[in-house]
Length: 197
Image (cartoon, rainbow, N blue to C red; front, side, top):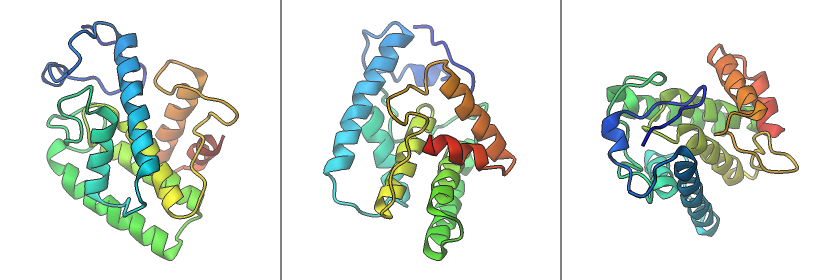
C-alpha cells in the first residue's frame, strides 16, 4: 500500500506500516475509513465510561488504543522512531509526565481560561507526538475529554454546525495546521478560535 500524507501529517515508516491489521486495505481512502470506524467505537467507549482521571498516561494510552486497536498493531504504544515533528522518541514518557503535571497545575490554579487550557493541552500533546499515527485526532479527543471532565463544553474543531474531516486536504485542515504552527511560537489565539469554531 502507498500512503499519501497530507501537509502536516506524520509519515509512517515501513516498520510501522507493517503493523496494519486489516490486510485488505490497499488505498488511503480505505485506511481513513477503517480508522474512522475504529474512532467511532472509541467515542462510544468514552460516552459509556464513568469520568475518571483524564490527566494520566494510562488514560492517554488507553484512549489511543481504543481509537486505533482494530487498525494498527501498535495502537496505544509510544512510537519507537523519530518523526518530522515531536520530541525524541526516548523522551516521550518524560515529556508527557511534564505536560500532565503542567496541565494539572493550570486546571487546579485556573492559570488560564478553560478554553485556553484545552487548547494548550491539545497543542502540547501534538507537539510531543506520542504515537506513530493519529496524534492530532487523539489530542483533539483528549482535549475534549479534559474540557468535559471539568464541566466545560467540548470543542467543535472547525465543525460548528456540521462535521468536517481534518485528515482531508481542506481549508479547515490548513487553518488547523496554521494554528498549531502559531502555537509553536506561543500564539494560541488562532488555535483557540479554531477549536471553538
